[in-house]
Length: 143
Image (cartoon, rainbow, N blue to C red; front, side):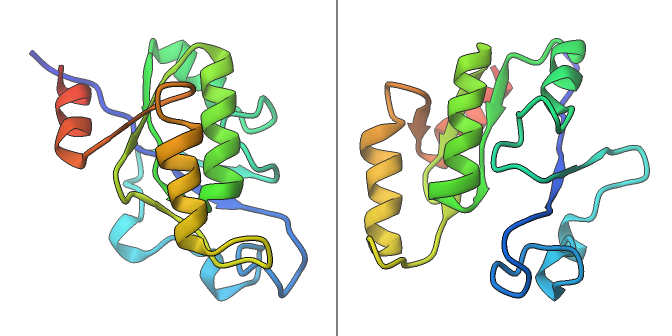
């Protein structure tokens, strides 16, 4: 049976220039060569935290393709990933978060490790997403 997988690269526009590293013109804004999309793959540029915000166009694209499950990975746990997981849940997607596949930075409020554990082990799991080991995430997607 053929599975239709959809992989997306995101470019985050916004934040405070020269502070986030994720704005147009910042060196880290560009997609890593190892993850560069093929010509047939879409790139969504967003200027909001959630990749599934209606202004991005991704949720409409996924609905049109009949996608029901989303595996959420990336940066930052407590901003874009959190917003995307909540939005995806609200839109009816099954949100899957593989273990150690999101990350963040230390802040004045909590360490990166505390933030990771708070979101992955407490807030999301069983409420807004399935937080699972990577092997389990692969099995869920392939099922």
